[in-house]
Image (cartoon, rainbow, N blue to C red; front, top):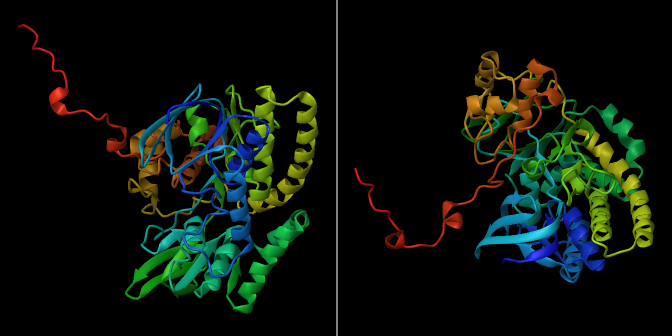
Length: 461
């Protein structure tokens, strides 16, 4: 594929799909790219096989995929975007090989990265993230284990636990680091979306009926492998035997591409951490680049879909596809709905906001960067030796240099450095660099026979 479009949308979750549909409706020549084989993102992930019992999320996801399919937007799934240049030139790889396309405008709807606070044993086989568990449950209808302990914070806790019960698995316990008082405090904001609140109450009721122990103000202290599975000790010392652990401490916006393209960012814990600076319609300081959805600040799927449509309207207006009157009328209605949806999503995001002391209690030998096997002690020694910026710490320890490019360890490394330099705002962000995702050399290499490579003659002595 090599073609120029009015607009490229990266990500086909609720935000990206709705952005593409709204853009196409406004007459914008649009293409949407996603690494998955179908639209839906994490919330509406398409199941590999038709489930025996249709859930509301499956129905909503099927409707979203059908609407996008007939929207008129060009769909490019199975594309791993590894580099984007300003202008915008997008480089991707797929089963068909290398692809390059250009777009006048770019909307990023890249979603989030799961935050997991390290603890002794978090790299043990059988310990996976809550987000990874949802993929198993939704896409593959597969349990993470026969007896699973669920831990962390936020709405994914009960969603995952309920999903495990639906598939016939056993939930040993749910460890919720939030006290009951935080849930009660959030109720007025959650009530702004009665349907979503009702779904959450249904999950809690399912746990209650199954008599699953729920420990509030509790979290994992350590995980140890034993002959017949795993033993989880809470920070209070209470042991639980299981064969799988699903753990997650919230979501943080994916800033890989915005960092690479030089977008300004600000630290907003209530929105998940570092977020791109943007106007009310998603426009950034980089001309032609807009952001929307949870990648612009965690507010949930309902808000993401509306933010996607709002960004697409701004693109259509900037390209002259719609007039100012239509833009103002449609944007006003969307913004009102977005404010309402954002109250619910914001309350959920606040439940998982990173804490300044999240990593202070880690033992020196606790692995922080699992790709490069870097522990807390090594990071602290580098800081003591003078590494006072996040990029310098990366260079001195290799933390963040592995295949995940810091997506797993970035929050913990930044938290450790923040303690010494005056806060997360002072720490800043790692410099964005390609490849944005791991790609094979064979995917990038030019097809050429070695015997045809021109070899210059040796220079005279």
